[in-house]
Length: 133
Image 1 (cartoon, rainbow, N blue to C red):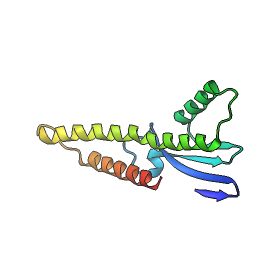
Image 2: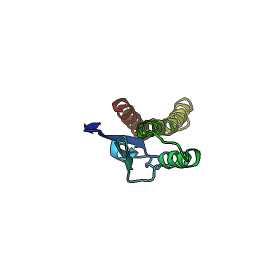
Image 3: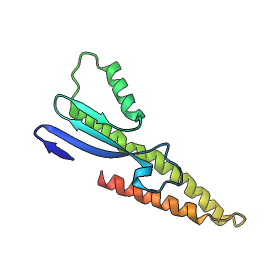
Image 4: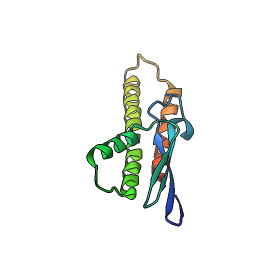
């Protein structure tokens, strides 16, 4: 977060829904979302389409025709939605861990140590990013 006069600049990291399952770094499992906020404007910058941002602006365009929307309220909602993207990633990781647990108790299958290591790395990355945000 940086502030200059009445303009605020924030960089967040959203979970990348399309990240490769073998990805294990902040850069490969997240996308940057930069936001410039002032009382007069809100600008978002991101490399990939972020559906939750598009949905928010479509909702605002439909619901609010003649009303003024606070740019800070919009920025707050975007930040909330960025953090919610990690629910998808965590659910996917939990499902894989459940299957690993079954493999541990079902001795007929081999446990894949590389996959479990990658899952552990993903969880640590998500935990670190979320705690910083």
